[in-house]
Image (tube, rainbow, N blue to C red; front, side, top):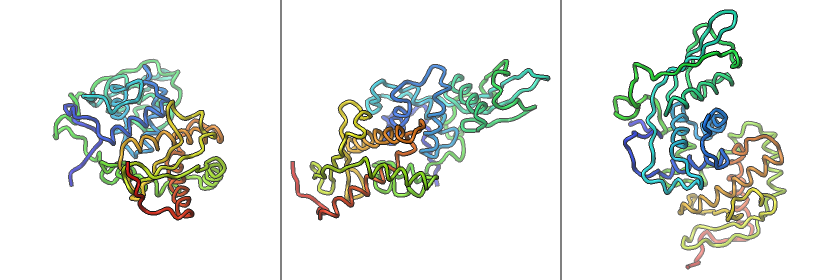
Length: 327
């Protein structure tokens, strides 16, 4: 079986796929529409959340960060970028040196789009005691978290891996695969599979007691005003949601509309975007209620909740499987 990866050959200038656009827009929302910070360090916390959402490897995660950095547009319209700017991922060696009672150092192997990203990703892992973006090789270990004691940093391209990776089959990094990542498969299947995508979100949510509180808050806040036939497609419907509880978090020009397909898949990209904007607003509403700074943790749960609530609304009112509305 051929191994697939989200990482492109840097010579591939074809338009972004739906999956790439979805990921970049998720990153855009995570950064509140901002560009990648010049230092980038604080943005790695958001990038780590993207890694968790999509199940990326360290290398894929660093690639997405570089892709966002190179292709950022202020309005978030990644669909319009032609041709896309594909980062050249290279292996870097990053060394931190510490002078305490004796000389010590720590070495990181990290694949990144540039030296700054390599240093920032290694710094994040150093401070937070993780290997979210790099692999550490200890000599005489530096005290993790004592960043103020680091008196020097050195970065260089790995001499054994010179040149951009993924540019030729011989330079592909093994085991960077997406075939078995069900959460990504269900995002698009090259066309987004929306109903199945969120089917396991309750089961996958770690804190089941907290989940009950989330669902109770959604029951209190989410009111369906009406469900109507969608234009042109006989199995697609539009649910109008009372906007008052989350209105302040809706983007300009967005509405409380959720598109629900009886087929299991949405048929138009714009419908997906409407759903994404609505669910993001509700996610931020939950963040206001429960605190924290991780609104994306609610994202898939809200999709499943809305789908079940709309399905029940339609069943209770004897909606047909198909409508006959023509435009």
